[in-house]
Image (cartoon, rainbow, N blue to C red; front, top):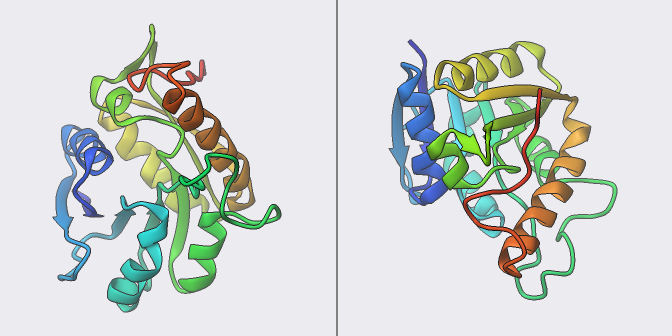
Length: 189
C-alpha cells in the first residue's frame, strides 16, 4: 500500500485524495505550515504563488520522493498569461528547486469536480502525467487507475509547459463562464 502526502486542503487536494484513497492508497493531508511527510508520493496541492513557501517548509523532506505538481501558474490578476517564462514551466521551476526529488506534472488539466465525479461529460476523467522518471509516472498512473480514473503518460517533464497552457485555457474559459467548472477538456484514450 502506498502512502501519499497531500500538502494543501482545498477542493483539488480533497478530490485527489478521494481518488487515491478509493484506489487503496493511504492519504495524509498536511498544512502549509509544516509537519512530517510520511508519503513516498507528495502532491503539491497549493496555488502556484504559495509553492516557494511550501518548498521552504518541506523541501528537505522531499528528497528521494515523487513530488506531483498540480499548479497552473496563471496570472490571476489579469488572466492574460502564465507567470513563468515561455521556455519553462512551474514544474521545471519546482524540479530545479528539488534536484533530489522525482518531479511530475499531473492533475492540472482537470477540475476538482471531474476528479470527484470520475467523469468529464460522458467520458471518464483522464489525468495527464508528464515527467522524466518512468517508474514514478507508472506508479502514479497505477494509483490513479486504481482510483477509477484514466491516466495517460504525456511525455517528459518538458511537456509540463503545454499541460500548464492547457490548464490556463481551461481556467480562463471557466472563469469567463464559457465552460462549466464541472466540465473541461476530455481526453478519449
